[in-house]
Image 1 (cartoon, rainbow, N blue to C red):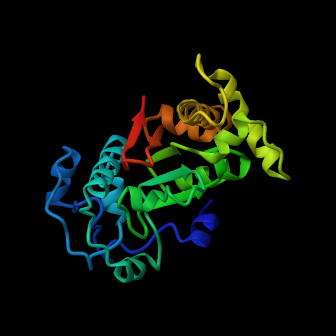
Image 2 (tube, rainbow, N blue to C red; image 1 turned 30 degrees about the vertical axis):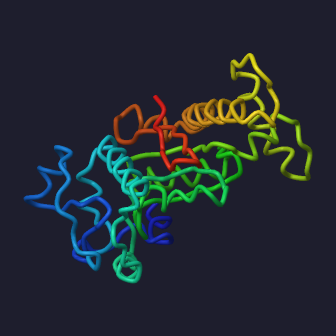
Length: 251
């Protein structure tokens, strides 16, 4: 495992800087952070998340910071990101707080929606935000080896992959991918038009699909399920609304 850490640079010296996204420091500021109190923003040039900052947070606090980031995005008041500073401070290693599994849809870039910067989150994208063995391995690295506290599965409205699964689309390798989504189509209770042309039904299936992915992660990765049972991580689902920018966390 240590060799994997070194390969992906999952650590860097703790004095390389402080993070803007979490609005929190170490030492005296840790108590306030642990209480969920947002501190004054740090300077943009004090960039990437340190191990002390990340490790001091609980999974619930990481989720809360995601919600705050999405609120800033919706309000058009994002943090002032100095990406060059973030690049420099994370060059020798990384301490992301979360791993996000989202769709490849160009309208749903998780880092922007959550107002995060370089070094804040691991990000995996695949049509329909499904889980497979390669993604499970990536999430296991992110949490078990690199210390991420949250796995966020992020679906979205008007998902083309979901509509394709509903309409039984056949297209090369996409055919097999859509098969993974089809159980969500069958499991979604809906009395109206159950076709890919019905936006309401597509969104309902997309929500079910997120919940199915969350459960698939727990079922197919004893490592991640074990970390969650121990309280070290949380695996949660969410739906992003393309029309209003709202990210809703699912129970």
